[in-house]
Image (cartoon, rainbow, N blue to C red; front, side, top):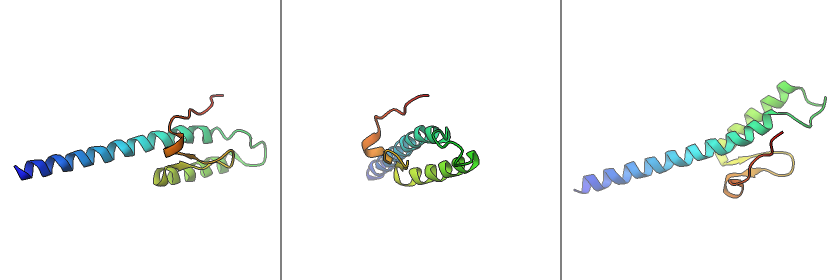
Length: 88
């Protein structure tokens, strides 16, 4: 009986961690799409450089839950979960 309870607890924990990881992936992806637009940079930054910066920001977001923008501020999972990025 104790083994069944332990097994159930382990399955619950793994499932909860998977759901949290998926949620972070979705959160980060939403802001990654915005970053990849590379809008507002004019001729100052080549598109390839912009996309490289976005890829780095995506990796950081997956690690810490915040997608960093220069303006207005980083978008963080704990406070910006309900914020929807503006469409074009």
